[in-house]
Length: 345
Image (tube, rainbow, N blue to C red; front, side, top):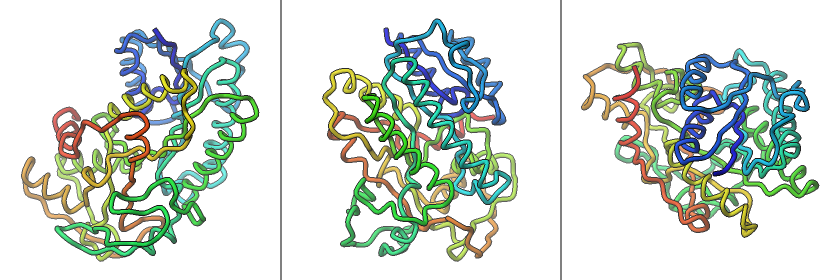
């Protein structure tokens, strides 16, 4: 039995990781400040499954009082963060974004060191440079942007790999995640803490609270079912912008493998792309076609004005994670669509 600690444990990703590891016979603990809508609902679910949840803010946490009896964890998974690429220019100010994401990561590292654990950081595909992504050669085929042959470093027919440029601009959200990656590497190198950084693509499944900043697939399908107005935004208003997706259960299974590698001290790579790749890629237009078949016909509006930080195409190549950890996502994009359609209410 392993002891696992998770920050942001009542969020979408954190709660799914917690339930998975608890179901595998581990003892799971975590912390959340309950700032996001739906956190209390997830709290009740976690408690019913025997998971210990502490209420607190990582930035001003008095760990010596709260965690006096808790040391020697096998893994510390840091999920707590703001999650929208528009954070910094929306209702969450740039000051709040950077303070929340960066300081919470630093405090998580300090808590990890205190708990004598290994560190796993949930980063984002948005650490890759917008300007370089926008230079990629694309075409429109089958209602979606598709990648043409490109000669840039860090790109292949499989998507963007870990060698792709992280040169700004990234978005304020993306720059906060990249800054956190650097902090993780510096802190763990100095204190000799084994660590992994997972650059995750679009994580999606049932239970994402139907908000567009918490998962576009869940937002789209649930808005469709509730007959709410939907618009294609930017890029001609056709819904051809594309990205890939990953179910949190597939992420959970990968992290289980990563923990085992860290315990054996066999890991030489520390940063991994983690997503579904080309096979799980979809455009909003393709998602709409699926909804038309599975739910009912619906007219989609359009807004041709591009939003800041939106991209025509961003699909990750997870070859390195697949090779090293002998891991492969099991949920297809259609499995994810159906999970949301069947289980969200």
